[in-house]
Image (cartoon, rainbow, N blue to C red; front, side):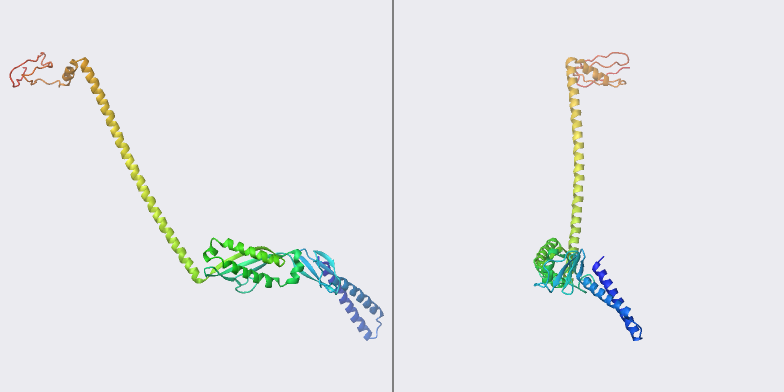
Length: 356
């Protein structure tokens, strides 16, 4: 609770009561009544009210978020060199008074939207980039008064620091910073670098004037209608290019897939052919091995060939034609229970051999 304000309220009530009793005393005196007691009461109340007024005029309460600058008619400089800290203080009534300044964070906004900025209407910052494009920036400056520099701020700016320091400095610094970047950089890769550059310049400028920059925020960046249309066309072209690239990539994948399928089929055919070749080779090796075994068997048992021949003859054969000019080396199979023998004949024509 602000004790100074409460005391001033009490003083106001005392003065109202004093003037009320004084009016009553004048009324009674005009009617011929005695007013001695009322006069004494008026005098006492007037004295008490005057004393209380002097006391209340000298009491100053400084809130925690404020600092006070004492303007003094008794000081050679016209002010006290130390700012009043939070709490209750005493100043010389009628010779000194206190100018309070908040040290809480304050925000100054410049915006295109009406009602958002400190100035009604479109208050965005118009700037031109290094490649000649005009852009508009919405920005906010968050700052506070340095508690140790309250006296200096009062002497240099008093309460004009918002309109005469924050606004013109921030707008000028923004324009200078934007002029060092082209529009593409402002939009994409260099936006944070732009904000950082503005923040550093603002911090230095405010520090020189007793203020502390808490943050600088680029709220929005807007462009001219022509540039916005060109950006939209560029984005459409990029999207189309991306779509075409996607189609080409899809076709490449399909072609690669077809190649892989063909390669797999070729490998399958190759493996199948290799299997067939290996099977033939194994079969040939087996046949060769069998023939070798047969040859080895014939070397050791010549009659085996005659036996193989005889077993291959059909059991129903009854007649055989043999040449009569060549020796008949093989014994004939049994015909009707008789055992024929081979004969030698000089005749060149074959002679049939029959059995009844």
